Length: 58
Image (cartoon, rainbow, N blue to C red; front, side):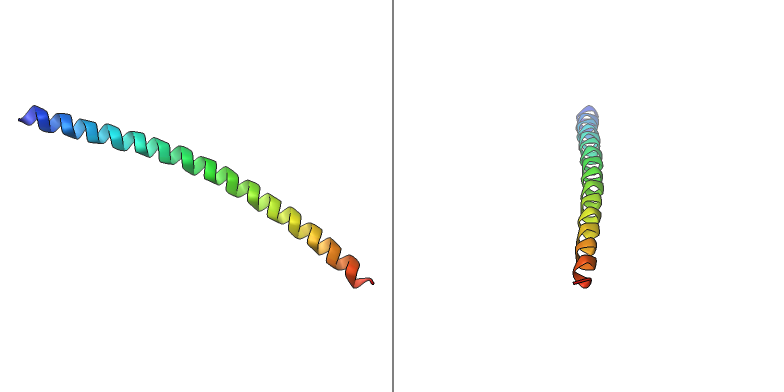
């Protein structure tokens, strides 16, 4: 009976470690995407600001 409990516990720990690794990978990908989107947003903001400045001169 005790071995069965240890086997179950070991399986659950292994599953949790795999899930943890998967979540860490997903988190890293999401950070990269967030940085890309932030840069993209800043690029759009700069372009919009430049267009608005040109329009102020009209």
